[in-house]
Each structure stands twice: as C-alpha cells, then as structure tokens.
Length: 412
Image (cartoon, rainbow, N blue to C red; front, side, top):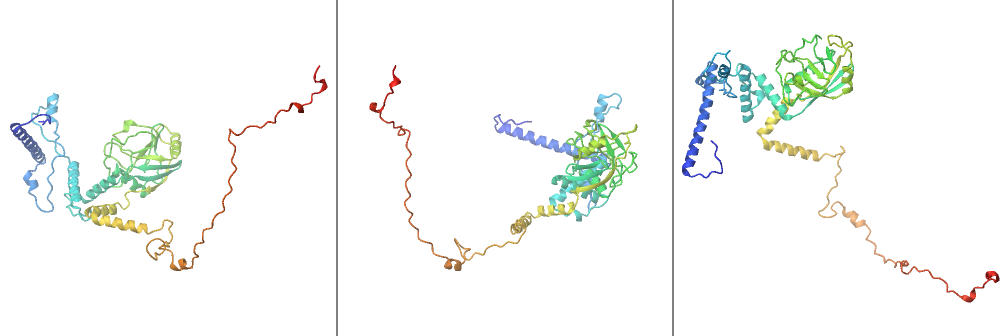
C-alpha cells in the first residue's frame, strides 16, 4: 500500500499504515522462506541438513537468485497438450548456477574480510579453488577496465586488434593464451565469404577442429553492447551455444543476424587495407580461398593478464590498510619530486642566511663596488612645435599694380 505524502494522517491512520507495512514485510519474508524450502525439497535436502552441517565442508545455504517457477502451471492453463497443474513450484538452480552462486558468496566473503585469495583453503568438492580464483581475476579485470592489443601478421598484411578484456575476459584470455603459445602460427584461414567474414584458427583446416586453452569448450560471453556492427569485428566461431574453442572470424561488414549467438571479443583498429586485400581473394565453391591466406604469427602487444595476481594482491592490501597505502603513495610522490625532469644530477644552491639574498655569499657582497652616484641628466631640447591646421595658411605676396607692365600688343 502506498503512503501518499499529500494525505493528512492522525494517530489512528498511522497505526493502521504501520500495521499494514509490517504485515507486508512479514508476508514477503515468508514468501522467500517458502521459496527456499521448495528449493531445498527440489534438491532432496532439508533446511536443517544444509544449515546444520559443521566444519570446513559445510555448504552455505543457497537462496534462489530469482523467484522463477517451472512454468508447468502456466503451460497447463494455456495449452491443451500439457497436463494441467494446479500448483506453482520454484524451479531449482542448475549445477552451473549453483556453482556460480557459491562462487559469488565466497567472493563476497573474501572481499568483506580482506582475506588472501591465494592462501584460501576450501574443500575441492565444495568450491573449486581454481574456478574461484578465475572468477576473482575476471571481476578484477572488469573493474580495471584495460584493453588488450595484438598484431596478426598474415601473408596479405598486418591486422592490429583491440581485445575487450574488460568486458569478456574469459574469451580474451583464451585467445591471448593460445596466441602466446604459438597455437595460431602458420594456420590458414579456411573459410572466406565476400561481404561477410573470414574464419580461421582451426589446425585441421576443416572448420571442425581446434580446442581452447583449457582443452574443452567454454561458455559464451554474449553482451548486448557488443554487436557485429561494421567492418573488422572479431568474434568467436562455434557450433552452438557454449561450444567455443579456438576458431574465430573477422567480419567484412555488419552481420546483425549473429548478435546473441557468437561472442564478440575484439575489433580491428589498424590494417583495414590488409583486411580488404583478404576479402578480394577468390574462393572456390566451398568458400575456401584459392590462394593461401595464412597467419604468420600473432604478437601480443598488451596483455592485461600479465601480473594480474600481484596487482590483485596489492589492491586487496591497499583496501585492507588505507592509511599505509596513502603513506606509501606520499613517499612515492616525494621520491619522484626529488628527481630532475631532465634525468640529470640536481645542483641546488645552498642557503647561506635567511631572507632576501640568502644564496649570495658575504665575500661577494664585501668585494662588490658601491653603487655609483646618479648623474644629473642634461635638459633635453624641446621639440619644434608643428603647426596646426588653423595656422597652416599660405602667405601670398600683395598685388602691386605698378609692378605689372602691359605689352603693347595686349590690346587690339
């Protein structure tokens, strides 16, 4: 029930509203508790079994991440092909979702208590330590927001790629690790479609080979903000959901029909002329290039996964003791201030006294000549005054009639 601020309340209405609010809170808590009980029943366990376990192997109580039902009640109500069901049941979490939620709980406790994640001891059957560490590494890289950069040298030119490590870290780690191992060196692009894409990364060259750095397919990392929009989009090739391996493709133009189906993990930032040259290579009826288009090597220019464990440890230590971190930063700045900007030795003058002239020696002041007396300057001549417009009149001679002699032939 909404409590409108424009309504005037008295003591009676205030008691009624408070009672309704407490009733709604209790109802919501009871609903969550019943949903948790249904979840435990679906897993074949009771709440007491889960909460009563003791020791290091005790599994934390997992509440449902959302109140999502199995959908049998709605399906039976709207479809005659389904068996009618009169009771809603909470859908249990899958094994992957349960593991992900246990990782989230462990990560939350780890960050709240500032524990050392590398010395964390958990039973292997309850929470896989390697998976927890990977989850922490990916979360740290997403917060760090640093991109990765590689250079693919091909037989038709060089492609510079930017990898979205801050958005899809697992896919980028797979690509960077395989590139550093030399997995892609010497492999051909086995599929090329003009105005669409070029695909490679398969050691067999058939389009059905290749494996990830873990030796098995890994899950998709599809984000709505990463789309196959424009030329030069780097994306993972797969044979269905969560079947990523080592194959990838680069688009020649937008491919919106692939959004939501393939993981976009990078883009071309340099070498579009080489990409256009690859697109012009003729192909056969099976979309295979008629001339070799191969990857000579892949150079990893920036890999955010390098020393990420040390950076995480430093971040956790800074968060655990902010005062010590601030003191270390201050000492670092002071050490940097003492360095010359031109990387040379600093010859600072020594202060000999306080006040003005503290760097001037007494001997220099004693031997210096006294200031000369000021000489009186001679008066400067006055400049001639220029005539103004009013005085600039032309003087003409007076007319003397007797001074003019007329010629005899001046008259007829």
